[in-house]
Length: 315
Image (cartoon, rainbow, N blue to C red; front, side, top):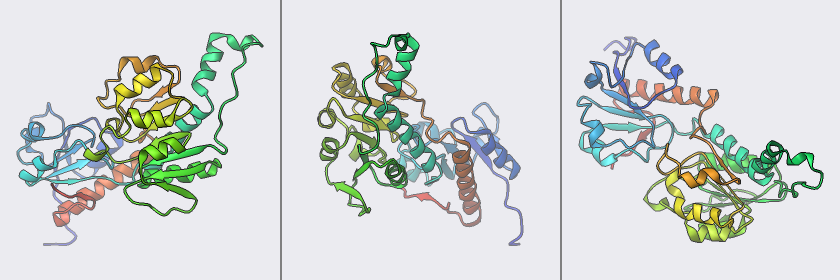
């Protein structure tokens, strides 16, 4: 085979909406993008999905020629790896591509909660600011506050690095002590929650982290504590969370992810100390280019060797 020969074009099915720059990269490389309404959909040998979306037998049955399933991003918790293994479908991801952007959003949430920005905006909007006697109480602030990060992968480490620049005390909880200088490690999430002022979730979602943040952990955070989630919605027991917010037994909550997204528990929308965003942690121009580059690397490697660069082990 001629080493300089151009790889054959592929039919690539999009299982979820993707950024236009990725579509342009795919088409620029000579590949044919397929949407569910296209006649050539079933001819796809590659599919691209978002790792949080349920992708199992029901979806895969409509793609009988599928050989590679690419996740847009690092997560793959929605992929049925047993189903892909039965069909001999390789699965890949793009680790680290959006880590910086997600860490930035996490710190934006931390600033919003510890400086009381939702309450400050409501104070201005209501006109209360005009009354000198209705001043807002002093906010906790970041300097000297304790931040605890659950999950010390690429995102978690970047959050800790950013928090250090804000002169915060640093703590973490992970499966093993990462041995990070200046970071206090806790073996149990409950103990980390009891220690910190703000708990940030950056852990990978799997069976072991399902509802890891339950009523007991929320109670440990206490009425002055805050919770930030930039991981996955399944990590938080949303019913328990809404109950403590209703009782005003939590200082604040900010989340980019929800267990049944795009559905958000209706009661969560009315809490004045909650900041909610529609899973936009990786939605920056820099992150999207990094993810597109990683996905294209996976495709080129798969065409050349039969293996993607960042393969997810099959079940």
